[in-house]
Length: 373
Image (tube, rainbow, N blue to C red):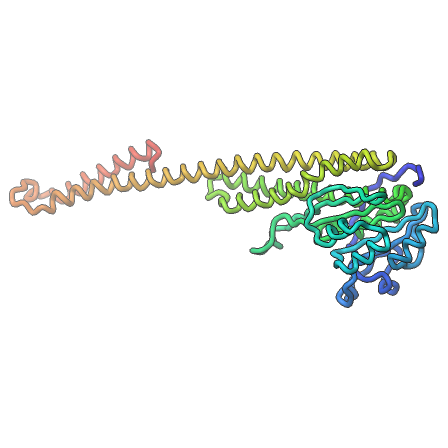
């Protein structure tokens, strides 16, 4: 690899590439290897998104199949291949594995995409597995969707190739490739590990974005719980706890593989991986604090429900006490005794109303003063 100092600019958004076969892209590609909107992906089952050959940080002109790209890269001392795949099938992945010398166990993991974050070494080929995350805006959520959607990103790094395998819609790589080819060519000169860094950095940056947006949701839930209104429903709190569990499974296990990578990669790239490691550590701490906060919110909400139930019972008891005055008065004068002196009094009926109303008012004032009403 070249020892030139890498660039420092950050990736810029760009539309993601569609998965079309490499040969079919000749009529549609631009200089960055991206495929514009179209129906090509529907006409093929190929998982190849892009296949580029890079020499001294520059992409060679022309378009290559995976085997042609590897032969071309091996003909240059500082050349390498970046092959991008999206949800490859077993047959296609097996063909690529035979061409690039990938281990069968890693190929199986790349197809099934059900792995925890890990780093494995198969001779000269390193295999990194990460889980991607994407925050789903509330207006896109349905009954079957989630607040945080997760997928998987796998990276095969060899001496003269890097293969990225993406499952799910999170962490698209079209913009990463375009940025490396244009604004960060000096970094791309460092070879396959530079691509591995850029992809890892994109995945971790998405972790930070998801964490910030989840934090905003937690602030809304917390505000609802402690407001004077009805408060956030317990179902929403439990839903957020479940989403955080899934998010933690993506973020926390990546710490050990990334720490191993920092010691494994060349020194020129190592400092960039350390920066990614710092971002990951920040996200892990943030997610851990979310879990503690949600537990506190849930306990507060349950306590509030208990208090609300007690308040309701006191209100019912207070109104029942006031109603007892009228029930008692009606019960006494409904016994139909002949010798009740006040029955023949001219003002007995108005007096009955006045006494009942006064007693009810005094009870109402007493209950209000004690916080029952």
